[in-house]
Image (cartoon, rainbow, N blue to C red):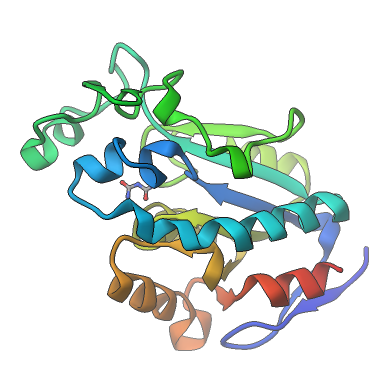
Length: 222
Ligand code: C5J
């Protein structure tokens, strides 16, 4: 196996491309486009769009380098049997999870709004993990897929930084994976959460991961 290094904080991350996966979290219309769940929660969804181009560049490089690429989607079964009542009630939304919105039923599998944006659409051979929670390991087969492929290092992109990206990186860290988050490939509706969320990952000697950026990760994969 070939050993390489990603320039990152708090210190360079050694990795082997064969044992590394790119994981793209929840780049769905429901979070990135007007009329979806993100907007229903009162957010300015345009704030997430800066993550699209750097993630696209990294995705193309990862595909070229032969990395395992995994996509996730947050959402629920049409009958909502996998949606905790507490999640459905949260926020007292006028139009919430399961209700009809401009892009179909909000956060429901199979609906237009639930799918991944065209810029980052999964290739036919790339696993898509449908998750009902914020973390990509919770009640999914992600850990099984990664283990079967001998994956040790995760490059984690997507939205939102302090919610599903953070939860997934924390879950991965507890399972023994080394995670690097490219700062320009993640997005938040709250600029201060974006900044602090990234600080939290790399603080205390990399308490649960590393932070880099698309350019430096692409260089390491090149
Ligand atoms: C949220 C996510 N923010 N994908 N989901 O509810 O971060």
